[in-house]
Length: 338
Ligand code: ATP
Ligand code: MG
Ligand code: FE
Image 1: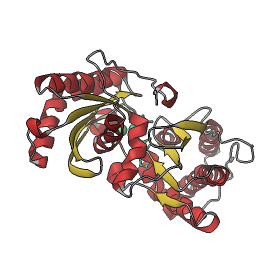
Image 2 (image 1 turned 135 degrees about the horizontal axis):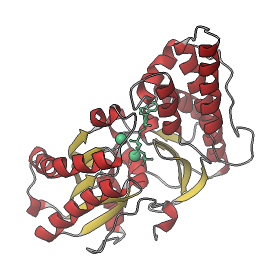
Image 3 (image 1 turned 180 degrees about the vertical axis):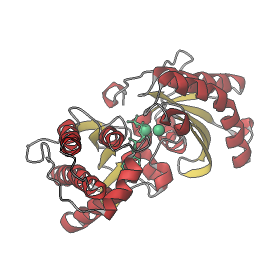
Image 4 (image 1 turned 45 degrees about the horizontal axis):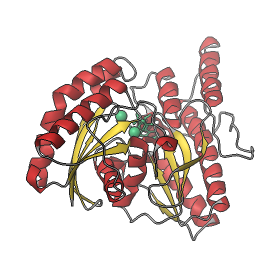
């Protein structure tokens, strides 16, 4: 079964052709990051305009690269939320037009489910599993009792982890998005600044990163006022240590509490080298029977391949959309009918 998958929820226009949910025949990703950098973040209107320009080119390129004709396809998948409404609508319109023109079923996919299913390209998912979703807009622990079933057992009360990276990076004058650069800096420094580990001892699976962000910003501003030297590498290392400590602690605890076979880490922040190493180590030490799966770096950020993998599961469950399908900017797992 060949699925054409379309992703346009934020600032990447991406189209992929996926075979049987686990083979990537093509995965075209057109990033707009350069256009948004001068604004220090994603500008929704700018994103929509780029998607309009890119989407048909990406569809053509994905088909050519996969050496597949529209008639060979068995479905068209598209992200319908969560994300920016204008950006989502471009992908949805393109998917509807393509599905209509070639008489193919339209498969609606939740972007966050897509992030989780990116792990399926590494190893077949086995249930029950725990997923740590860490991205630009989300930080949550999702328990999947079986395929297609999602229960959020904990989530951030304020900023997402990626958002915290991008906000503190901005204070240091780094380019947006700054997660990757902070990760690199962190590896050159030491955890010398004292930052909080919010909610780490609390008996729940929720997170909070806004206190850490404020503490970081205060440290930088105070030093600037007193004209003291700041050690950027150590600042990055201290910030990253705080983020990793809480993510690892709560994730391992959740894996002990729930009867899971696998732990999947996904989303843009799952590209973080420090986090990948620490979580792998903690799991190996404390729960060696749980398999840790994390997608390769190119499948951590937004891409259509992951949407195609999730779509395969949706299609098997008979989740097909009508042409009424609309963008759902704040789509959550709870709103997906199982
Ligand atoms: P969502 O998936 O919640 O809708 P999004 O799609 O905008 O949000 P992603 O593209 O999944 O988010 O991830 C982007 C985020 O990942 C950015 O905040 C970026 O800074 C962060 N990020 C990327 N690489 C790293 C890294 N190595 N370390 C930490 N953060 C990183
Ligand atoms: Mg992005
Ligand atoms: Fe994403």
